Image (tube, rainbow, N blue to C red; front, side):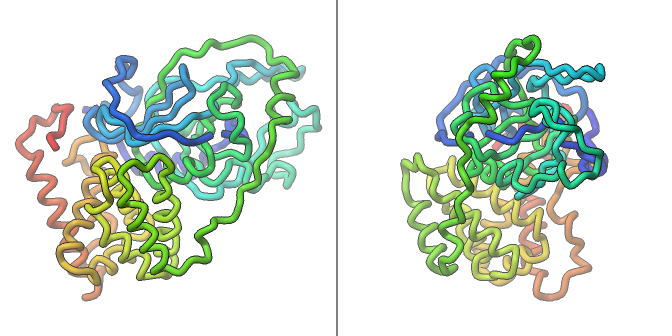
Length: 389
């Protein structure tokens, strides 16, 4: 098995360039069972083999769709914008190929409200002088939508202000999602989550002016303020209970409610964070509960101390459910060996000896959940590509 090192990914994220990213992308969709995709066969160039019974992301360029997978089951799907396949040439001798590459990649970094640093090709395409590197003209706030998940090699999955272009080959290589789904994916994935890009869209010739004009002229949709931002925390928790209880939820209204509570909880709202943790294992249908667990794992990865202290302050049964959800969601994004030194066991983020008494019970619950997870797979061969649920 290949060794997959988080330290290398984190250092790569620090110097990540966004020159291949475009400014627009799409959303929607609902869960449905899915057979194993026969196109997901090639091993990644670097990193562990993708385990088909764990969580990962598929981007299908053939049909311009993103699928968040749990094994062979689709937790949710949404239309995306992908690379046009055209080439842009400049009289200086430089050229750019605007296709979305296929293959297996891994999440290196993720960010809400990212800044887009405009590359040279944008100025050429728009017939404007190319400013020097570091010029304020290159900096565009909101240019990548509400959130971005970076894959390296100038490639990202990000939001858009032109959702009408979703489902088409309209980008300069990056993968565009609606802002709502870009935020959803932001919470679902972690550093190291595999993203498998499949499909064989043709690589085309020189880009005609009409292609750039079409993208520029698409209707821009301003991002509205979050309608839940002013709601009280208790009202949001009541709303979340109501939304999680809906069996056939095609609108996925719970996602924004959970997002609002999560961001509030990671700031300074203990009630919001405790409320989310207490709902672990109780988020309605199994498909939704699997995804809800990824939100809790995201909360832990971004605010470990706050989560551990909050676990300490909820009933023991709820604490154990939440700890199990955090551990399982975290480790089901990891496709390497469980005993590798870089395996992302949650307790490694927060040494117990650095906690005061207010975090001990929460840390112990996570440690017990980790031990149970290890015990389930300890007897399996080291080269196994399957983890029994």
